[in-house]
Image 1 (tube, rainbow, N blue to C red):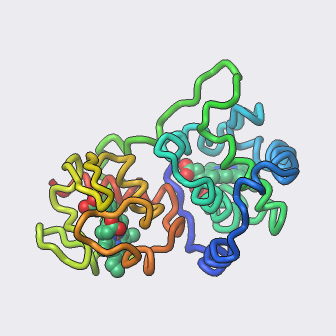
Image 2: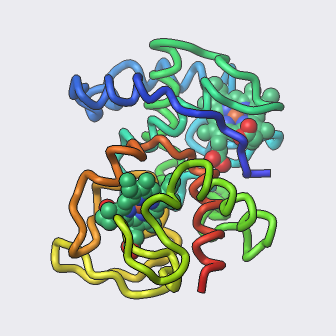
Length: 238
Ligand code: HEC
Ligand code: HEC
């Protein structure tokens, strides 16, 4: 069960940490990370496999698998960190909330973001990359995504009919070629869509202004699991 019913975000915290420009690499490189590793082993490892930590829990998702897609897409470290941090505060059963808080939660989030899915650890078994493609086309996941499309307000800007709105239509988006404002053309695969949802300002579709989507959908505010459901939904809109 990698679908998480993560709750709403600490938008305030997200905005705060973004605006005071905390040096992410500084945090990741400092003692916080080793403290985070210790905390992870003792508090999280019973339920989660993470190669770098040497933990093998199976109650929760394999965190290398969960973040491999995001790492491959070179998400900002801060985005992944935020996803982990939010998960700690807003986890749904059976994962207990607030196992660690404050600076400890930041340390754990920094640590997980710095190693999960990077393939950095040299422990034998390769991470299972299951997070990449949402739900193998499962109707349930797409249906969940359809509800999120309404409840998160994506429908205000993205039509399902092919009509251009404030944002591009979702009809036919999956697998199409998208021209970006930086002159590149990319294929709208799961990785691209994930990035567009988790970090809306990073890649901008040509002809649309930057900052419109991110003003409503803050970077990192949609959980990885919700994004996966949304992608399954988008994929179903051929
Ligand atoms: C009692 C078992 C348990 C413990 C302890 C636990 N988790 Fe979880 N975790 C889960 C389960 C089950 C899920 C999937 C369901 C959900 O999202 O709530 C999950 C989901 C996650 C996810 C989302 C993964 C994805 O696929 O997007 C992250 C990140 C995460 N946990 C991090 C942590 C961290 C960090 C800790 C320690 C502070 C921790 N977990 C402790 C059981 C646990
Ligand atoms: C306030 C309007 C607005 C809202 C709300 C919004 N978006 Fe967007 N979105 C945009 C705009 C404008 C763009 C094009 C500029 C860019 O690439 O950021 C865009 C781009 C995208 C893209 C890339 C589309 C393409 O053609 O390549 C995806 C995927 C996306 N949004 C998904 C979502 C999802 C999922 C939600 C809901 C969680 C959402 N958006 C909510 C305005 C919005």
